[in-house]
Amino acid sequence: MIGIILGTRPEIIKMSPIIKECEEQNLDYFILHTGQHYSYEMDRIFFDILNLPQPEYNLDAGSGTHASQTGKIMLGIENVLLKTQPDIVLVQGDTNTVLSGSLVAAKLNIKVGHVEAGLRSFDHSMPEEINRIVSDHISDYLFAPTETSSQQLIKEGIEPEKIFVTGNTVVDAVYQNIKIAKEKINTLKDFHLFPKNYILVTFHRAENVDIKKRLEGIIIGLKLIKDYFSLPIVFPIHPRTEKMVEKLGLSLEGIDVIPPQGFLEFLQLEANAKFVLTDSGGLQEETCILRVPCITLRDNTERPETLEVGSNVLAGVNPLVILNSAKNAVKENNWSNPYGNGNAARLIVDICRLATKEKN
Ligand code: UD1
Ligand code: UDP
Image 1 (spheres, rainbow, N blue to C red):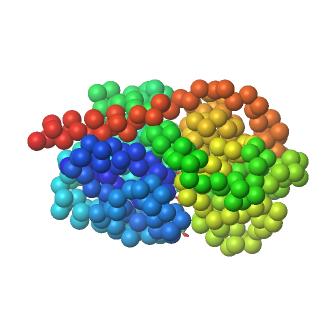
Image 2 (image 1 turned 30 degrees about the vertical axis):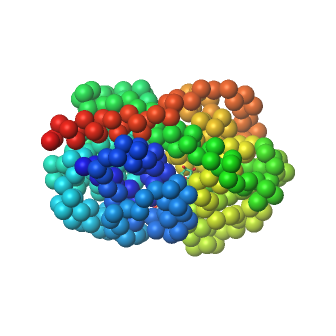
Image 3 (image 1 turned 90 degrees about the vertical axis):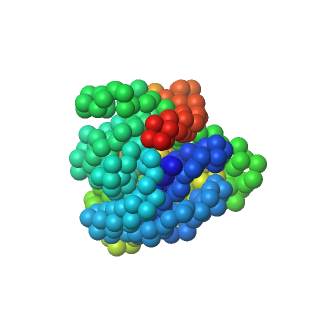
């Protein structure tokens, strides 16, 4: 039996191709939702839109400090794993859900498969970097999206036999859903937008929104871009950002703030944007896949492949650097996508099936 653990928006999206593959292959599996994300538009909407089965378990852990959130999730996962005894547990990415899931499973001697292994920003001040490092080093199956991430794991001393270069399941998710989006909805029309005539922005990282100076830098940068390009800036706002803008008394006047969008709506907004400004990990990958220029509002990235192919540039949070990066946003978008051809979920599930057989 395979235990799929997830808890936040990007995990639901990037695990969805794996869940679909388990369904298609009629495998014995269950979904454990930690409830790290819980607002309708950060959680349920994705199960509805992506036609995913209800999680068998939901821990309703919710928000909290790192220790309280991680501790609560760990206790809940331990209860479920003791009861269900899966052969392998899958976690995806770098959230507190991933750290908790991999730690609990490893200590119960249950095999751990880490989807999206080997990413490194080399910035230990990011909670995600700690989560990635710990999870990678206690995992038994490391599903690295690219050769670069695989090499990083080898450099850190992880046995090559444990590492599988599979591509990233985000490619599967984009390919599977972009067509469905086209058939079902017209988000641009709904928001009175025209292709390549608006700019899309998302940011939510703790290091950007919890620090007033950095948050202000980004907001000033966005306003400079709005003045320079005279185009709408569409901003589906993450709840963390919304709360911090209000708490720090800042204003987003002039920016078209909208609620977080469902995946189909968001893919359409992303695919048709002139360019994207973001601090999201998933967006750096998706813009690369969709061939839309990306400007990353961070000082570093664990997705160096996007910098190498030229789909992405790092701009940090200095307003003038953000503006200049936007002015220079690449016009040529014929780069190749380094994240695979959309069969990552199939490869990962096939390897998990072998793990299940080995145990029995
Ligand atoms: C988490 C991940 C981050 C990931 C992001 C995806 C960690 C350490 N961080 O950040 O790596 O990029 O998810 O979006 O795991 N909130 C709501 N409703 C929700 C969820 C959150 O209102 O459904 C608000 C709460 O005020 C909460 C805050 O957002 O305190 C932060 O939520 P949390 O899950 O701690 O971290 P994220 O910033 O979402
Ligand atoms: N996304 C979405 N609606 C939104 C914003 C993002 O569906 O309003 C999707 C996006 O396409 C990507 C994922 O959410 O697949 C990225 O999530 P997020 O930026 O929260 O997390 P990160 O990738 O940074 O961990």
